[in-house]
Amino acid sequence: MSNPLQIVVCAGIVPDPLQTLEPTTGATGPGIKNELVLPAVLDPWAACALYEAAALAAKNPGSKLWLVALGPKAKLQQVMMTVAQKVAFELVPVDGPIGGFPDAHATAAALASAIESIAGLDRAKLLLFGGWESASRGAGVTLQLIGERLGIADQFFGVDQIAQIGSGEDGSFEVLERVEGGKHQVSACLGAPAVLGWATGNLPEPRNNPQIGMANMRTIMPALQKAPTAKLDANSLQYISVSLPKQQRETRVEKNMTPEEIAAELAAWIGKDS
Amino acid sequence: MESILVLTHADESGSAITRHSLEAVTAGKELAARLGVSLTIGIVAADGNRIASAVKHAGPRLLAVKGEAFAQARFASDAAACEALCRAAQATIVVAPQSSRFARVMAAVAHRVGGVIDTHIAALAGAECVEATRWFYRQRIEAVVTRTARPWFLLLDSGTHAPYSGEAGNAQVDEIAIAVELPALRTEVTGFRAPKQDEQTIRPDAKLLFVAGAGWTKKQPDGEVHVEEAGKLILGFLRASGASLGSSKSLVDQGGEGQSVLPFLTHLNQVGQTGSTPRHPKGLSTCCHGEEPHVVGWRFIAERRAISLDPNCGWTRGKADVVYIADAFQVMAKVNALLQAKS
Ligand SMILES: Cc1cc2nc3c(=O)[nH]c(=O)nc-3n(C[C@H](O)[C@H](O)[C@H](O)COP(=O)(O)OP(=O)(O)OC[C@H]3O[C@@H](n4cnc5c(N)ncnc54)[C@H](O)[C@@H]3O)c2cc1C
Image 1 (cartoon, rainbow over the protein chains, first blue to last red):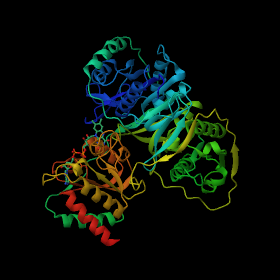
Image 2: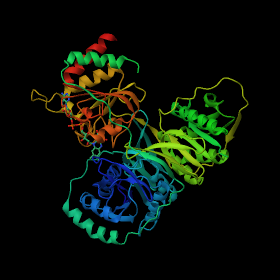
Image 3: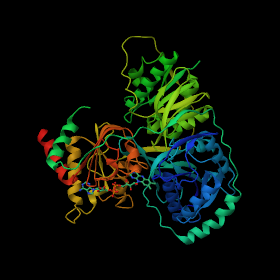
Image 4: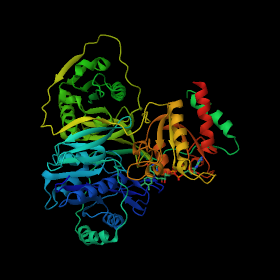
């Protein structure tokens, strides 16, 4: 797309997926044990959205890219040390609780007002990006609710690709969204404003670039210092129970069967109606 | 007192209500029976009344929108349709399938009618108050939630209820056509695209999920890689068994830039933390280590077996029912021969 874009990426932070998670209940409701000290990463699908946004901005000189993130300030700062080295952006942080248990409607309200407060953002040209589902709440509703609050009438989810239509001068684009049965639905949209909730997309994680990191950190640190605090309303959401599934199975480990024996056992198992 | 609306939609052809919608109808009926309240069915389709027969006797009131705009699964028109159906029904609880079509719009609809939403619901229970079960942290933590705010929208995951199969009888049904005020439409659905492959490898209705891991493309005990043979064995198995193909992240990522080393694999096949969480009665993992970010995608696979060369892989640690420590190349060649001989 060869016209300057205004892209806002909403991305939360989540525990590194290799960590073991244990639920606890605190004064404000359920949470993850030691969540504040567990190593955290930028939410994976939202990270894909960030890389796609940066690639799109690079193709369209004059574009601007903001990263809007809600989380505890100190934790945001930690995660930004790595994320800032990947692509150039301006951080719009909101200080707030971590985790998947706060209500999505409240999170969306806080993020929408953070976006409304971005100086110089032309909302008519806004492409609102994010992950289609987070790795914490995994509800797939936050971005949609923000879009609705901002009055954006074109929304796409499970996006794996965006491409300009024709020369791209008029801003129109084609979007591929994941639908059932391993297919993509193809849509043509007249252009911004639009919401795109990304799945994996097509880009690998960019290499760390210390120069981009240094340039980003110059604006990230002051932004974190000034971050407004969001109080999230529960909107009547109540947790009756929060528990770990019983996931331990009695595993039979077969070390001495021949390929023929295994194949016979598997063929019988596959053919058997369970 | 509660009142329940179940929202349903047509399939891509527009000629039938989706199976997933019919599952939501079952859930709505069960909930209505438990709470002793009435049920309304809403249909989003180009011609809802024409395909209403499948759900006609599920509730005494049937609302449908009509118009070519609703033939497409598009945010602006679908949100307007669902909003109009919700306003007409005035229900306190709205149950709908977590399909790509409704997942795209339902949070916005809830917001428009002043409601709240919870998604990926795996079970509904409770008689005094409605209790909804859903997973957090990518299927690692299970929670039961409730809300007092209304209207409360609940999107149900597929495979959690049997599809509603209609009831005999000629109960009086109020069929009401709902008018929808459409906003200016700036998006056009132009079609569908399947990943470049000769045949469909993702089969949600298959009895078996077959997962291929990165081991298929790694150096084997003979010091060589055998990617071509791996591809043939995997596709041969899919043809013979009718299984759905899943993959580990490491395998789909290998080609870089969206192109896998095995050309029939894409990110759509990826199972796990940043992939899908499919539902199948059985799953067979091959050449995959069974690390937690992968295995969270197996939450809804009931019987699990794995073939790995590594006796210390994740599967052996309580994540599978049976693990065969063996060479998947040898085993799968023999399995294929057995299945082909049978057919
Ligand atoms: C943010 C994040 C998100 C992630 N999301 C996902 C996700 O969604 N899905 C996912 O899968 N992973 C995900 N991962 C990656 C995950 O942690 C593992 O790295 C990945 O699953 C490993 O893939 P693998 O088991 O196929 O490969 P490997 O770890 O390389 O294992 C290959 C296995 O194959 C075996 N093998 C080799 N040859 C043979 C043979 N001939 N016969 C039998 N066995 C053989 C080996 O012994 C080994 O056990 C994620 C990681 C992160 C950090």
